Amino acid sequence: MQPVPVPNLQRASGAQCATVRGVALCRCGQSKTKPFCDGTHGAIGFKDKNTADPAKNVRKSYVGKGITILDNRGICSHAGYCTDGLKAVFREDTEPWIDPDGAQVREIIATIEKCPSGALSYAIDGVEAKPKERPPMVTVTDDGPYAITGGANRFDPSIYSLDPGFSSSTEYDLDREWSGAINWTQPLSNWGSAEEYKVGVSGRLRDKVLRPTAIIFASVPNATLSPFVTNQFLTYYDSHYSIGYHFNPTAFENFYAQNYGQPNGFVVDEANTTLSNQETFQHNKEDVYAAYAQYQVTFGALGLLGGVRVENTHASYAAYPFDADKNILLALSTSDHVYTNVFPTIQARYEIAPKLIMRGSVSSAVARPGFQQISAAISLSPSTNSISQGNPGLRPTTAYNIDWSIEKVFDSGSLISLGLFDKELKNYIVRTTTRIPVSALPPTPIYSGFTSGIVSIDNYRNINQARAAGSEIAWEQRLTQLPGILRGLGVGSVFHYLPLHLSEMGRRFGGCEGDCPVTEQVSDRLLRLPLFTAMTDDEQERVLAAVRSFRVRGQAAGALRRAA
Image (cartoon, rainbow, N blue to C red):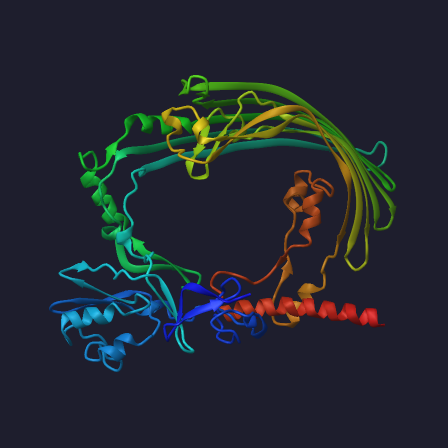
């Protein structure tokens, strides 16, 4: 294969760089095929952490009689065009290091325009000059940085302007819930040990309101971003990533107030404003009242638990439904749902041998539709070409479950388990997706934001039956010795999580082992490490090194056992 010149990539001599493969430029400085990457960075452990002082990433102004020089030390590449080319203005060993009156204005401008990093810029009579337009080019300097010139400066606020689709919005989003329960436990001694009878009632009342207040504009002023930014950069990731200058909200709010409702200012599109606010409005209520009775008893190695739970649901979902046939939003509509479910259950636990336990259960449950699934409100996202609308006719999904498992706990703290399950589902909720071209959408203002491409339309419906059945096998290794090892390395850690139903208060309310099996399995695997936001990099590395040391020790111990 013949090397092919790479467009817009040249050496310091002006000769074009050529390669036979895709372009990846060397950043570590050690590649044997510079300027192209050969993978050496991986072998030498190269890190691209930005070591520049973040405090310097701010633009300073040096005001002269005929010109104001603007300088940002935080992004300077130190190419030396300024200090080598115009020493009377850019003075390395003098403070202040820039003298804007040290040379003629045209000489200063010519020097600033050579700056490859954009650290230097200038303003005359208070108006900042736009960067000089140059063809895009990457120049590979001899054993030095890449000089990148030309192309749009993404940090230049003057290249951004108000979009004709500009809108202003606030949103009232309320999601609140009240709940309460009364439980009564009666110990018994009729048949076996740990015998008791429990009854209780509970209620959960949920109220969710989504009320957007958007303003859609038919036209907006002709304005760039320049008047609405400060002279400080907004940076993330240890000053490694900059996204431009800080936005000045006060300046924009004043501009908005001065131009709101003016002929060449912010002119409100009344029809689309009303439409936008109605299409996403929703007010949902879901109240669930429940009562249960439960009996449990233990006969030696066998433990039994049986009971029944009755739930009565009162729900209402209010929204502005969209009529696809008439292409309009209808009047506010409320869909009411009232239904009662009965959930019997029986569970068994048998201790075959110490630390060898078999479990089985037959149970039932309900899964109510989510608010977004059942609400008639329509959600439009032109930016992702997607439309979603709920189905007020959805019914809750009910499940009838059979589960069996056997587990073995070892002295080392590890656990192995095997399980079988069969779940029969009725009225299972599925999402349906239809994909159509934008041109097939009805010609109504509600779809005016969709301009091209394929649109995904999501909806929801019930299917009569569904089934999930299978088996699972799991191995858990609980590192109970880890806190002691870490303390030996000077890092304190604890297994700290106690499931609430097994706490002192939880037990007073009837909590016991087996009520929340997943929570109980996870509880003794959560390790709290001393990690917090105010830690220095060195302190964080010390904790991580201790954890890595434990991993290395574990691997070494495993190798010794295999060798033995």
